[in-house]
Length: 147
Image (cartoon, rainbow, N blue to C red; front, side):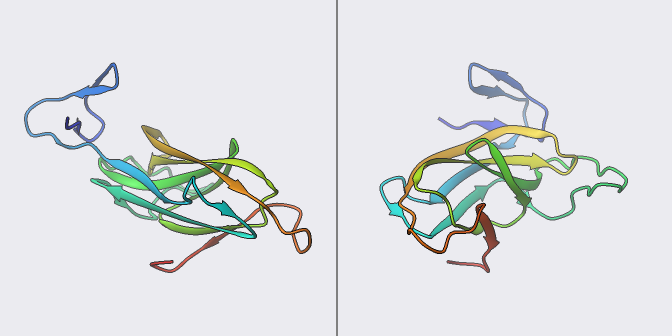
């Protein structure tokens, strides 16, 4: 089954999108890593794939004139355990110094005006942290293309 999206114009019905002729494929975001079947230590690699959506860093910063939403273009919001980590156009990150626990990572597509698209994905993964060398809060590091 294919779902389609018309740049913010459409009707969500029971998880499906009804659109008119000329529609483009619905954007998708997929978490490639972390793998839910792997227990991580000090570093957790994060990699996502985005399709049918252009990632860019042209969003509005505090104090700037608000950017209008551009259909099919925006950025990602990474949330870990119900806490927003970062908003970025990066698809590769490294999380460091997470405590030993089960964690939930959610990645959501966001328009330039910071309105949330109803497109997100999540993964549950485990961390067994080393006993020494952890900082007081998780760190997020951007990675160059490829991990």
